[in-house]
Image 1 (tube, helix red, strand yellow):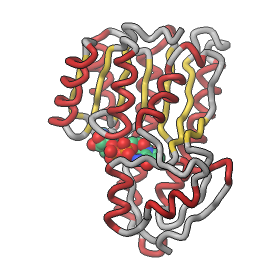
Image 2: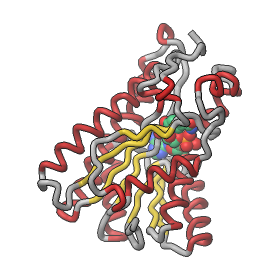
Image 3: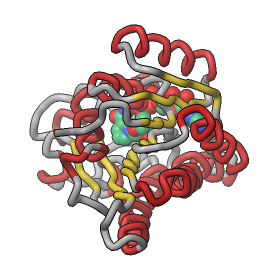
Image 4: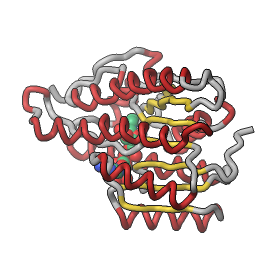
Length: 265
Ligand SMILES: NC(=O)c1ccc[n+]([C@@H]2O[C@H](COP(=O)([O-])OP(=O)(O)OC[C@H]3O[C@@H](n4cnc5c(N)ncnc54)[C@H](O)[C@@H]3O)[C@@H](O)[C@H]2O)c1
């Protein structure tokens, strides 16, 4: 039993792409959905669509995960609106592709502030709101966290950091309560999915479909719903003894161990 009916699930970056697919899957299980996204209008529109399609309560607001003040305000809204939080999914993330020799300090800060600082402080505030009731946190990493992919070093570093963060927070928050109503912290590392992020890569000519297919044993990209299935599993009671893990959902990419693709140098 997934046991997600009426659970409150907060998804950062849930307005579109993978986050939206996750929101749909949790809603299909009867969960109440909160979407916090920097794109306010899209967040509202997406929440409304989910409410209409699945008949669950939804709540959306504008949120910038690079600001701790903003994050605290977002969790205060969730507390005020629902009085609790059961599942936190940290999906907001950005990609900046650029050879390392040319990467600027400004872009480093921009990327790390979303992909690492944002995830850490969302985990912190989620854990504080979950409190003694416990809960589940799922961080969205990337297959690139271990499948070294050139031309996007800070992104790869940030996602490696998400895997490490997931393990250390899991151990801290399991020990707090000896595993009883612990806050489980896991990550999902998606392989290649045709979302805006990958379409941008095609458009910029820094990755092609053929390169991806050569590296992925399944010889196809994932559907967003296949990533969302793994996130729902880790957010539900079906994974009640799993914590600190990064689950690779990548069509065998990491198993094949094909390292650096010949992208931009
Ligand atoms: N698409 C892929 O192939 C792929 C592969 C591996 C990992 N991922 C990861 O999955 C996650 C989602 O990726 P996606 O492909 O759906 O991307 P996307 O760009 O379609 O969606 C990202 C969402 O995050 C939001 N966002 C960006 N900056 C934000 C901020 N500062 N505060 C709040 N929200 C913000 C965006 O508005 C958007 O709705 C990211 O963490 C990404 O790194 C994607």
